[in-house]
Image (cartoon, rainbow, N blue to C red):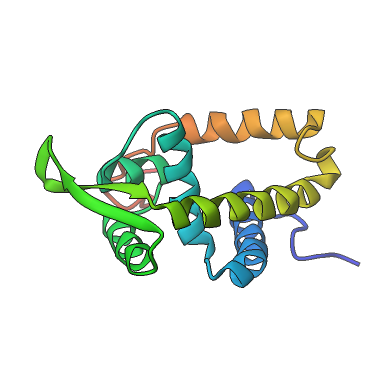
Length: 161
């Protein structure tokens, strides 16, 4: 019996894996009132704050890979929920800096634990979070993420290929 991934391309497999993980994380975070996208912003903000940074929305967009407009929308919603504080960036009057509120720190801390347990389970075939297969997998993903996205200006045609 064949399955949906037989003969699949690497791109398709990356897409399927990202969708599987996104759905699993959305479900796991639902009791905390968070989505995977909100968690990506909050978790990244927590990590950056722990290093002493208070990033603006653009820096957080670059860090998370989310679109700047989407980060702005997420940040406004998280501010309304009392989890994030938005303040003018003294270095750039057009920019907004973000930081976690005390409630944001508490909720994000709980969310990190939930996601960590879930990801450990999802990575079980590779030995869990600390497994040697996970280390190799992480290195491979990092190598792929480090490759710049090529700028394709013209559609590929038979004549140009």
